[in-house]
Length: 312
Image (cartoon, rainbow, N blue to C red; front, side, top):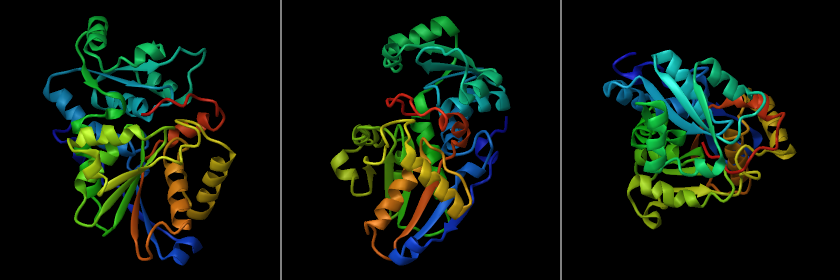
């Protein structure tokens, strides 16, 4: 494993989008294609993991333990990082074990991740000291990575993600699950720049409190630099419908690349809706973060009845 994980993957390219709507509204929209940096570690997950992997190695840990739902991009990326960089991995999975594994959990299993299922009530205790102690008693010593990579080291990686962008911009957007990526991006903002997060969970207003806690600031003062759109969740986490599915197909036809149903499709749907409604002034320069997660489409688009309370 290299001394500096940040040198493993090259910065993602930035792609300009062109459409009649963008031209009519006078909006410049570019996409930071984090989905292209690696087929298994691509997206914001790599940025969240890289400094955690360095910390685990520095502490002499050989096992990573983390949390996630059955369709978690974070579980997928942790499993890939484990086999690539020589860590054992344990995934604490919310919900009952199914008769067959979906594509995300199948990949994790094939990477050697030990899958440990807990019921939803138990899963809610994932951050409690008592539950963590129980996990140590069962699995021994491990380096703990929170659900979604939600910690200060992950924020540091997301801060650097934004600083990779050489093109000038006024607004940067991302999809929001735990809010860690938005928190890291907001720390990177320069004068007159703003960040917008699009919540993929139903009832995403709780993210204001969570992100403000991450930034150690008051929500009322930080909203001047960032805010969250909560009306584009399509029913909740890992929920999609015919309208979103159609949007994904049209987007691929118009722009030549794919969106994932859990995160980026909802963000782009909301972003284009805001542009259509004239939410942004003509001349606004927007960078949208494509945070990967495409591996989940294969199974998710065929199974559209998942829980709404997941947020990796």
